[in-house]
Image (cartoon, rainbow, N blue to C red; front, side, top):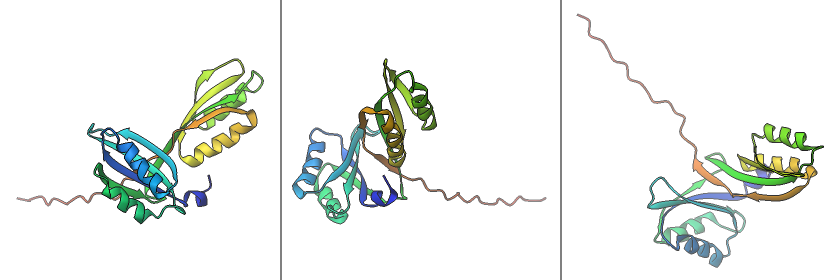
Amino acid sequence: MAAREEARHHILTVLVENKFGVLSRVAGLFSRRGYNIYSLAVSPTDDERFSRMTVVVDAESSPIEQITKQLNKLIPVIKINELGPDEGVERELMLATVKAGPEVRSQVTELASIFEARIVDVGFDAMTLMVAGSPNRLDAMSDLLAPFGIIELQRTGRIALPKLTRQPTRLRTVKSRSA
């Protein structure tokens, strides 16, 4: 996916209570309002009381201010962060099964090595690869796998966290006492 296409998406990380029905309530809100969800990933956090949802929505069909206002009205929502294109670290996981007979198996293995993918299953004439990375990286890998023949492909959807600050902490100078 090109950078200009990514700019047409909003990435929201939503901290919610880890309770039954929360996912359906959030998804229902998007459905009722006619907002298109491009990607949705949910998992518990380090605190079992909460889950983090990463929702990627289409910017053209979904005014971000309206989405956040509606999400904030839901009781199980604790906190919402919007991550701009340069504000977050995004990753996806992809599994791809490709045709890989003995004559091309080394080429597929080489491609897997370049993308730091793992070979997770090997059959007589096919291989399944697993790779994690940025959405652009996974797009590039699937484009390069296409000529071999993709049998099946599954992606998890994006997960994202805010980038960490890179400002150094200031150290104080301690004056020594001279006698």
